[in-house]
Image (cartoon, rainbow, N blue to C red; front, side, top):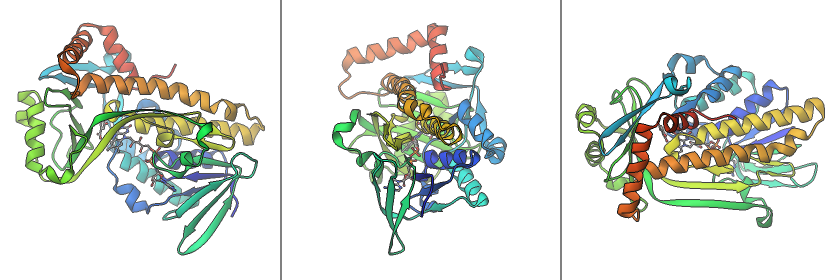
Length: 389
Ligand code: FAD
Ligand code: DHB
């Protein structure tokens, strides 16, 4: 088989890229190691920046998003129970949308199926070759047979544990990483959200987040130690811990119920440099990871593939490699800006085992400064809603 762009991974990055290339008349195949149902079963991000919403609209995958997505004008921060609302709309005239990653993925998969674009699910043993030359190749196994795809370019949209970044020679890549000494235990529940907007809560017992997927489905998280196991967290234990970390009035009105999903995600900051290697491009989680505190991972993935689609359109349309040549620099600029913001939100809101009294006083001073300074609030608002210079 031959295609122009082989896309590895059918997460948000791969599926968005597929859609953008289709619109540009560029032939692409998506190769995914899991089944479509498995991909749709992963509960992940929940917040879209305005620029992500705009891109999904531009791609024509907005019907359900426009009907079911919920615009939020701001978020609430809580510091040991003291509340501070950050009103994005009033501060900088922007807002975000609550619409789950699962829904974005489903909309993109449906659009792909409707247009007949080629996707290969349950491809095992995916390998990539010759991306330092002009004719890269991909091999994989499916239904007991070996397959090969020849292509012009490979888009590595295969997440943090994918084959793309792992195939780059060690000496060609630099990795920057910080692993945090905690994770997030998340619970999905069919109950109305505790508040109209998201609440990011710092508490001595640890961070907590009240989020949502709809007016009747809520998503909650609590910070847990790195070695914690999901099976040690009964629903009751989770709800007790969450309530203990919230402002008492809010805790009082929290509606709990049986969890319909419960999982622990580790927190990490990670950047690979560069993100282009000849005819291989890394995008999304394959290229970088942020701790989820700033709600950025999904939005960064969408940003990267929008840049890549533009670069590839220029290559095929105008025979110009200028976009391809600057892809890495453009992605890395956005990556480090967003890494900084996600790291900052994380260190403001979490409890660090070795933070000490000094660390706790600095966190309090940071929160108080935010409360007192409109400029500090604008900075948070600008970054949370997605800064584009
Ligand atoms: P992925 O979604 O990881 O997709 C990669 C795909 O590649 C997967 O389908 C995988 O199966 C496939 N794959 C892997 N290896 C191979 C291979 N060898 N061959 C073929 N296919 C392969 N981000 C936010 O913006 N906001 C949030 O609120 C948020 N919350 C999160 C909560 C959790 C619990 C987690 C885990 C993440 C969260 N994120 C959040 C991050 C966000 O989900 C990711 O940044 C986003 O999924 C990245 O998309 P991606 O397409 O780059 O990677
Ligand atoms: C959600 C996750 C986040 O990391 C975040 O910052 C906001 C919302 C969520 O899953 O709803």
